[in-house]
Image 1 (cartoon, rainbow, N blue to C red):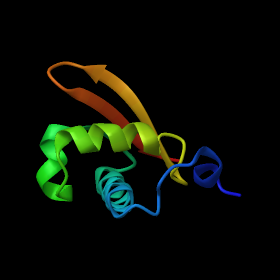
Image 2 (image 1 turned 135 degrees about the vertical axis):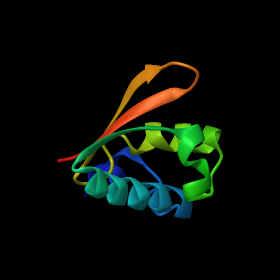
Image 3 (image 1 turned 45 degrees about the vertical axis):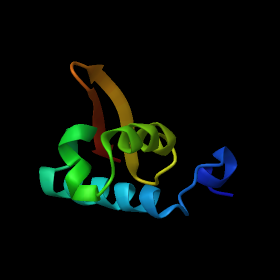
Image 4 (image 1 turned 180 degrees about the horizontal axis):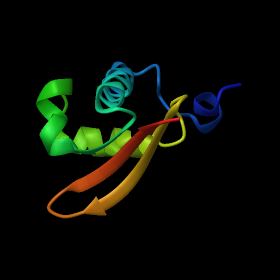
Length: 84
């Protein structure tokens, strides 16, 4: 059973899959690691910053080969995203 299935993470959700795919693509372009704020990527993934924030928490530890960590809060939550 996958980590996502054990933890009940909705990776079958279109929004979760879209965000995970976007993060994989962006980390590949960035050279393995990047920092993101939901309010800056919301148009790219067609989700609100609030939806992105909730999904980022759910995707932590649930997406193979992707490490997502809440990094800081200055005006909006910043997440560090890195491929493993």
